[in-house]
Length: 363
Image 1 (tube, rainbow, N blue to C red):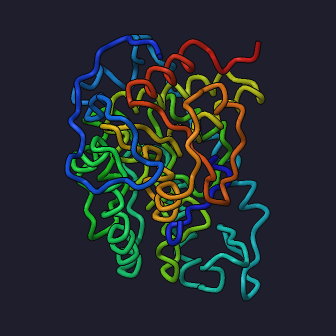
Image 2 (tube, helix red, strand yellow; image 1 turned 180 degrees about the horizontal axis):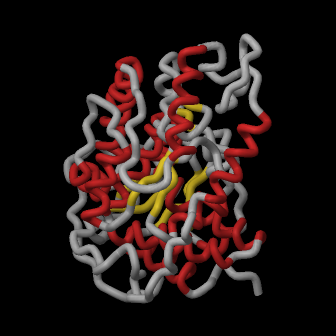
């Protein structure tokens, strides 16, 4: 999940615990094409205008969440220190903090690698409070604009209407890369969620466990400017375009927290089930809205290539949490299938029940 993921952006009844208000679908849009139009049915509101009280310290049922550990970044420090101690030789033979594979677009760009090291150092030195600004260049802001130029029309066609509303609520600029701190100032006032910097790839247990405290570990670096629509690793564009807006929805924020609470209790086999379920729902989930299939997961919404493949080729599988938890995935390739929820309401209640009631536990 966070340990290894590719973002190909260029070519690429449940328990009814509460009744959700209806969100009108997007009328008058073009036909979704063969295999992507389903019978019209009502779908609930994804706007989430009523956040729960004290979201940083209570879950959906009012239970108090665990206190934040005194130094909750110690696991990150341990992982990153091990990487730094090993070092990484790049073109020219110099040692650096961030390792890039030889086929990485920025491998031979000394300026890019130096900036990656500077941005990684921000995460290594971070100990809470406002997140320091990353030193983005005008070239990198141009990459951000290029990505939005391609993704914007795809979102209008394939994203749920609720996602478009959440994106407007967050109000991120499409002209320059937002800094994590400015995004956090908005998220905290809505659901209490926040994004903290991480230097690079981390293990799934660490990534998921942080979610219990309403913390999403986010990278700050940007893909290399030579490939604006492709990145071999999750970058800040994926984090902001794919994840940030979803954290303004109290129920999506609660699902993330529920994954985190479960991860803190899970053994290795149970953690694998949680990791897969997260991948097939919050990363690569899909749902039906007003009779049309829509991309829901952050991995789909942040990738032109993934959306295009989803729209034309990906197999649509029935929404089944147990099957998702047992289905492996390959983060280095386009997803050959997605699990389709009949509505947002079913996706939320089935997934929340599975997490809350311990459906992920081994018998």
